Length: 178
Image (cartoon, rainbow, N blue to C red; front, top):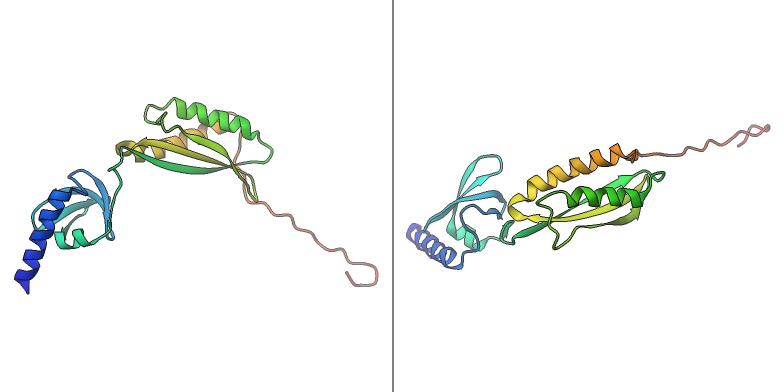
């Protein structure tokens, strides 16, 4: 039984090396494990998780698992749903966001960002912001842009809504009823 597993892992390792669905340095999710590929050997693949833990996965498991490779494509898209107050100018907010994105070197021009009013929400106007960035820079661009957009909108007096509710109280009439 043990030799059968060994042969299966070797066979799977050979197929992984030939097929190359992942390579060293790729950010991936294999089964339930997400991280960066550190090593691919004939029997196993080593992943360093985003928490810094090294996990050795038998190649049979890698070969038979769903593999999500976050950097196989040169670009990756992310999006924000940004709510602004109903009293603020949505067109102005969109212009501000476009300006912020245009000034960042890793926000791709092609495909270009997409910014539009997506919804009239319960508490504010929802602006959808879709941005493409190089896969290797995706996370840093995603975190930096959200903060920069927030600061730029606030500088221009555009605020973010808080949940609001109107409460109506029934008045009692003179006969004791409502």
